[in-house]
Structures are given as structure tokens and as C-alpha cells.
Image (cartoon, rainbow, N blue to C red; front, side, top):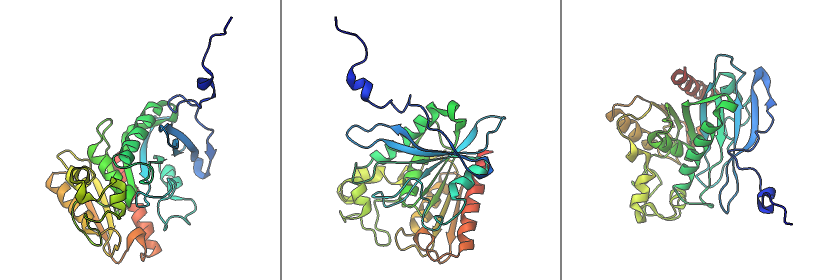
Length: 295
């Protein structure tokens, strides 16, 4: 007689992220807890996508709001736990500081341009939000109070998510020096060049794939009802021209959406050239903006 039960392939396969047990939390100062390397999506033929989750001290009054952090790296590289070169020496780090202030923080992987072309990275962020919502009761978070925060290429993806995601809608966006327009020459970027990070992300030169370039341009996704934005950009940025944030701010204002634009004098990309006190102020103001929306 042949035994019945799950097939061997099912037995040896890791549990689906929707059902997999959560890893144990690591405790940090001030009651902050961290869950590292939590799978949120299985990608056919690719690596599992993971997130790190920073949780504030337990609050008996109910679930805490969420910051969804999107890392930079020209869509080509980068690490989910990196907010940029100027915050790397901080102790405690930026995510622990956000959690200590009362917001959970999900730092998410997304597929890079060497793995898949747009819209894959944007789709991955949507999948992460779906997973976080599905597991929200276990995690003690409220994804209905999500602010997305991104820097550089992550700022581009965070802007797109804030402007296009509807279930649940995001309540705000903090964008540090993010590209907003892939269709127009700005600074050193030209849409005809097939070798730029933007082209590698799209899978073609933006000028050769105009519809995809438009869909990937936050500037062209602005509409009435967009959530509040805080746009912070160095006015000496040599990698992503400050006009990206200026144009996005103007479009949001024209659409009637709340927007704050902060040009940081003398700062290059990644806050290179800014004083330590300026970087601390940028973070503090960004944190205050997110918390004001969440409380």
C-alpha cells in the first residue's frame, strides 16, 4: 500500500512567507526590537526577498504606525539596512531611532536592475506592503498609517509608491534626493543614453521606451489626492539634479497636495559636503514630518 500525504517536494520546500514563522526578535536599547531577514516574497527563479523590521517598545494602546524604508544604490546595488553614507556611523542607527520614536520600520529588499527590469522593483514594494498588512496583527503594526521614506533611487521608488498605491493608501512620503523624471535631460542625465542607471532599470534607454519611462516617472504620476510629501535635496547635487525635486514639488502643489521642499545649501548627493549638524537636522526634520502624519 502506498502512503498518502504531502509530496516530497512540498516537504523540503521552505514555508511560504505568508505562513512562515517569524524569527525571534533581538532587543536593543530603549525597548526597541529587531527582526532581521524576514522573507516576504518568493520570486520564481530568483532569490527570496526579505525585510528587516524594527519595532518600538510594546504599546498597550494598540498597533504602531509604519515607516517603509527604500534604500538607494542606482537601482543596481545597495542594502536594505543602509540609509546612506552619512548615517552609517550613527549609534544608535537611524532605524533604531525611528523605532524609539514610536514608528515601526520595515527596510525592504527589491529586485535590482541586474535581476529584473521595471516595474519589478515597484511591484516588490507593493508585495512587501501586502505581506506587512497580512501579518500586521502578529507584528503589532498599522499599515493604514504608513509613511514611505526613500533615498536616491529608493526615493524614486518611494515617490512612485506614494503616488500610485491604493490598498492601503500611503499617508505620506519622505524623499531624499530622488529622481522624479526619466523623460527629460536634467544635469548629466540624458534619456537617449542606454548606459545610464535609469536605462538599466527600465531595460532600455528611456527615449527608446517612452511609455515605460513615463510610467516610471513620479512627476508624471501626480494627481489630485496625492499624500503629503517632504522633498529634501542638496542644491549642489551632481548625481541627481535638484530640479527633480523642484519639479515634483511644483506638480504636487498644482494638484493641491501638501508638499514641503527643502533645498540643502551646498550639499551634494548623499549629503556629501553637508556638516554633521545639517545631516542630523535633516533626519530630525524628516522624522518629525513622518510622526506628525502618523499621530
